[in-house]
Image 1: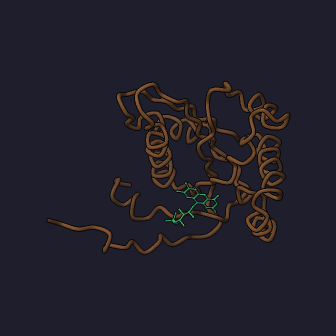
Image 2: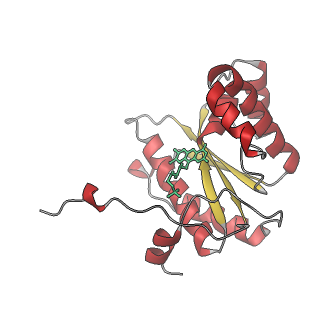
Length: 187
Ligand SMILES: Cc1cc2nc3c(=O)[nH]c(=O)nc-3n(C[C@H](O)[C@H](O)[C@H](O)COP(=O)(O)O)c2cc1C
C-alpha cells in the first residue's frame, strides 16, 4: 500500500478479532515508530508494545479505577462498550516521552511516532485506535498503583505516558472520517 492510500484508509478501529498480531508485524510497527522525525533528532520516546493479556487487562482496569473517580461519564461510556479500554484488541502500545532540554516539543515528537505506527498498521492490514484514556492509569506516579505500573511496563520514572494505542486484526471493515477540507487554504 502506498502512503497516500494508507493515510486515506486509516480509521479508528474499535472492533477486533482475537487473532494475535505476528511478531514480525509488531517489529515492523516498532521500527515505524522510531523512524519518525523528532525535534533536533532528540527521539524523546519510549515505545512499549504489549501483547501480554494480563498486562493489558491490568492497564485497562487501573485506568478505569482512576476514571471512575475523575472522569465518571467517560468511565460509564467505556463500561457500556462491553469491552476493556482497548476494545479487547490483542496488542496495546504505550508511548512515553521524557522532557527534553531545549523546548517542549516531545508531545509533538510522540505524535509523529504515533501516526507513523498507525499508518504502518494500516499498511499491514491491521486496525488501530489511539487510546488517550490509558494515561489516567499513570497520572499519579507517586501513588502506589502509578508506581507499580511504571515497573510493570518497565519504564523509567522520568518518562511520561503520552498516549496509548490498541492494535489488532479488524473484525469488520471501517470507514475513515470525512476530512474537512475547509481547514486548508491555498495562497
Ligand atoms: C490524542 C488522541 C486520543 C484519543 N483517545 C481515544 C480514546 O481514548 N478512545 C477512543 O476510542 N478513541 C480515541 N481517539 C481516537 C479519536 O476519537 C479519532 O481519531 C477521531 O474521532 C477521528 O476518527 P478517525 O481516527 O477514525 O479518523 C483518540 C485520538 C487522539 C488523537
